[in-house]
Each structure stands twice: as C-alpha cells, then as structure tokens.
Image 1 (tube, rainbow, N blue to C red):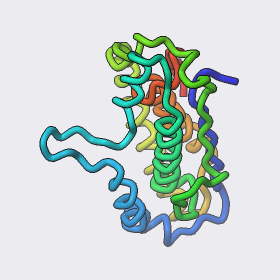
Image 2: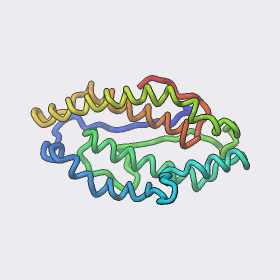
Image 3: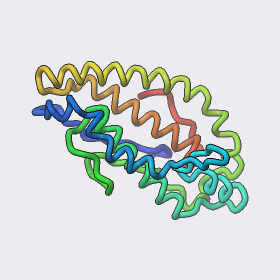
Image 4: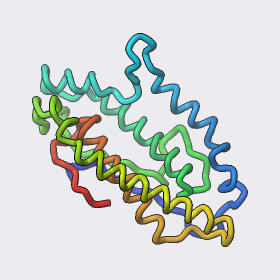
Length: 195
C-alpha cells in the first residue's frame, strides 16, 4: 500500500446529461453551501475550521499519536470535497452524495495511530511543501482549461473526452497527495510532482 493518499474517480464518458452540464455551477450551490458549513471562519481571527489540522498537529508533536476521530473526520470531509469537485469539473453527472460514494474513493495510508509518523516533521511540512503549491497552481490552470474543453465537448456531442479526464483526475489526485502531506499530516513521504 502506498504511503500517500490515493484517489480513484470513476469518470462518465458517454451519454452525458447536457442540461445538467450547462447549469452545473448553479446546481452545485446547495451542496457547496452544505460543505462550506464545515469551514465557517472564526470572526475573531479568520482561521477556517474545516480540516482538523491543529488537533492532529498538537497530538502528533506532544503525544506522538494521530487521534482516530480527527482522522475519520478528515477522511469524510476530503471525500465530500472530492465528490463535489468531481461534479463541478464535469467528471460525473450524478449529484454529489453527502455520504460515501463508490464512484469517488479516497484511500488514506495506514498510519497506525501516528506511530509511523515523525512527531516533529509536521512543524515544517507546510514550508517544505511550497514547491508543491507552485506546481499545483500550474496543474489547476491546466485542469481548468481541460474542463472548459470538456464542457464544450459535452454540450456539442454528449461525450467527455477520455484524454481530458487523465489531466483533471490527475490534478485532483495531486492536490489530495499535497493535502495529505502538508495539512492532514497522514504521511511523511514527500509527494511526487506527477499528475
């Protein structure tokens, strides 16, 4: 098993719903509001409270353990985020479920309660990940361009081009690996730069 977060998204290529694709950004509003309710910012300091980063960081540094409830919450929230992204980026027509969905699977590495993780590396991972953020920004622009092309293709032919899916799914997978390393702190293995 890999020491990185693995992403598996089943892409729908044929017989796409053109009406749904045309109004995708409007249709995603309810689930986006639901998802954003997990990341309400504290008015006093503006820190988002979506992924439980600080509890994992403190538990790893001071207790050398990754709390199971933090891991479960982060897995569920990352899964929800990926289902929404797959819908918005036109990879699927089915409305994103608030429960787990076999069409979008996120697999976390086995961390044995934090015993496999370096207890002090989480203090600097976000700095070490700076090159990953820059490359990820380029990949995000690439995925957006592919999605625009796929949007036009679906509206005209009802088909999602398979070659577009490789870049879009690869970009999502890349950002999941970066998040697993720098924010979710579930791996000490530096993510590769490939999509």
